[in-house]
Length: 492
Ligand SMILES: *Cc1c(COP(=O)(O)O)cnc(C)c1O
Image 1 (cartoon, rainbow, N blue to C red):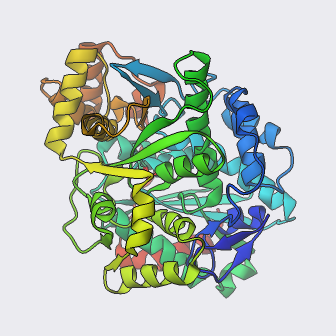
Image 2: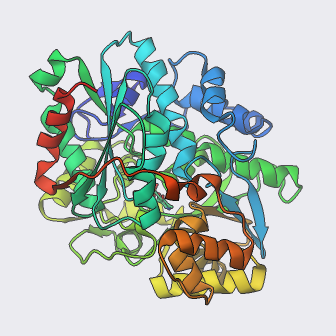
């Protein structure tokens, strides 16, 4: 199998695509034959969670030996349940809890796996230098990547986060990270600035002589990396298998999934699962007040020229959703010239219009919906009062979208709502939403939330308060590249 760039200018096998992260022409690596190679999705549904991951990853990332061993190393002992992502019935729908990994965010599912994939890819290609992982984070990717990569031999990890754009818990998780190969740095800007800076660093440092002399090569832990995206298909299968086992559906019945969306990685994984045969019905793209994707699905115009809102769901505060590029590639039948032109327009003019006949195709598979912070808070409160279920502000956006979708009467298939973070990561917002006072710092708020609701607090979060701050750097948007160069010239 060969991966190609969405913009047509590069190709790589799976190990190389993982190690490079992003294609040299700025595009994202995609498998042009996705869904056309034989994949026994029925067999896949009979396996347990690790078996599902092994089968999917062997299919999507051929050329990496011993996948079952890699999967076992990635997950064993790190998640609260063997199921990895438990499914909970809430009202008439299902909530798929993706946040039971080491950092209490859904990104753990992929970022527990990625270091194993990177190490295997390095071994496969006989690489002996240093693999430098560059990461931009809106809050959760950073910690999950740090947790995965700290002290992994042959790697070094950089995490850039928006200085004032993450919650106090998210910040504490990152700036207390230990490990000799770890750099954590705040950037005076928002997530889009961090992500642009990282993409520019890839371009600027691709042929950097100093890096080459030190045998340092860059890769990405963001969902632009196919090695980060591929492990995310698993839980769409895990949820479907669970519904089958419980007799709530028959094999082949469609199931709709609602996904709280930022960079479009999570929901794209659902669409890819569908290409492999999983009977996914509709995919509902749920956004917060940064409703660029809702507008795109409605109007066919992707327009980032708008006010950026800091919301109660910061991991979704994104105006440039990178992974949409992969969907545009697939839905246009691999029209790289079209994708390149759209991405150029987005970068130069701030918007593009996607052809109407292709939008019609997209609308047959996707719905989109957005809500404000006030509506999200109302949803958290109502769900707690009526169902006794506590959800975080990101999940609330999806619950709200699920309700709107139900009311539209478009489908009566079972609905799975992806829950992407523990409510304890955003205790102030959650307390306020259930009608309690949010007093003191976030750690006091976590305790108040536990006392009030009795929902167990994740262990990793409870321990944070005692940890020492190890990372204090704050830089401007334009300083990212020199900062990386300087840090890489120092011995780790
Ligand atoms: C990253 C994240 C999202 C958005 O996922 P994408 O793959 O970027 O669309 C949603 N919720 C939480 C809590 C996240 O950390």
